[in-house]
Image (cartoon, rainbow, N blue to C red):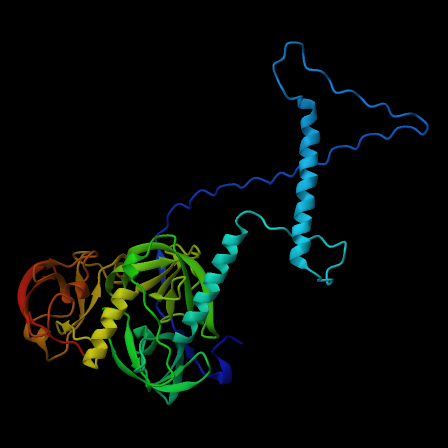
Length: 433
């Protein structure tokens, strides 16, 4: 039975639509690691026959006139003696550390420390401390949605406690469009939650509200101070089943630009910490247990279907907290503008599914309500928007990215390509619902 199908109840994936694809690229060369070499034991010297006296052999003399003060033939003996003395001292140290512990058999080998082991212990301790510090601030978010025909769908994601007033940040795709929300804390306690507001699709972020009391807000760090190679931990509801799952990785890249939900996000954090369905909305923390990002998307395969491993993306904490604070201050979703029509960005993927068009750059209008700003401006289904204001609409600047610069109520110029004919009109932007 798959996780999430208990009692024959369908369950939606927490990361629906997040399995991105990458263009095919040549794989990097793999460095070959040679076999380690171990010193081989030398053959033992033959024992003398019984009754034969042992005559000590005089060490060879250096050539006449040699200026060497040391007889090199004695060096192996000196090295052996030094090794025996060092081994004896090490044995005394181990014996002193072990004290009177008799649990080990006399024939058991005792592991000795090696250079760098102290560093390894310190890193392991720091990772464990970071996980213990951040874990109480990461929650499980369960949602329910009613479907046509009287059925229900359940979804599971993660969230992060922001303050003692009960505000919890999560990914918008986990909670938008749902009918009921529940939050489960690390101690097993549960609380009903309300969707306070979101910024979907411009930013995949939402803020929930639960009752105050006995909350552990997460401490945040400056995500602008992150460096490539820095250790990070991802904490969340992996596969919607493993509560509080913690994985370790590094910052693989910073300020990654990704086309996501119709918007180019300019500052994603790339990490190789394992992120799976259910991790959406959880925490990406540094080795101090401080929030540096929110796991939001993953890449599973290239466009050709080749498997991809270890590429996940997180919304940086600085932008996350900025948007969340705006939602909390307003008590509602971020106010964004709309031209009053639905559209499809022209990308290689969408162009492959659409009938042949007169241009492969821009955004094609897919629906226009009978009333609204687009209908009033004469915009029709099939028109291709090539400019909004003074901004060219293309793959580097999708329509939603261009809209983010304008407020509802502003009048903007819209340039359309209608079957090869260029049309210019004006639209009074409305408030996005």
